[in-house]
Image 1 (spheres, helix red, strand yellow):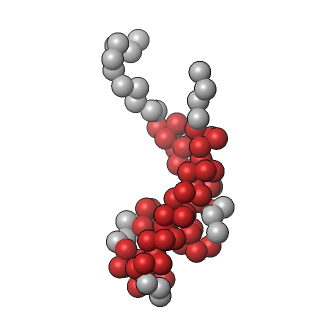
Image 2 (cartoon, one colour):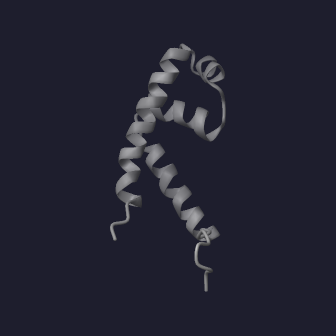
Amino acid sequence: DVPVGAAAVPCPVDRAETAAQVRACVDRLPDAYRAVVRLRDLEGLDTDATAARLGTSPGAVKVRLHRGRHALRAMLEPLFSHEG
């Protein structure tokens, strides 16, 4: 029994499945978006470090990150939307 008002804590299996789904969707992103999303969101690099690693400008990183996150959200939304 879960007390009323208590937040549901996802079990480790659910977290692992969610992480696997997210990684699979990241892998489906176009190359330029995938590289930026991995470096910024998964590896935790800042914009300048990401730009240096990819040999591009910080502005290009910001644009690709925005577009990559938008595309990723579009792929993930159907997987995680729960209509009740």
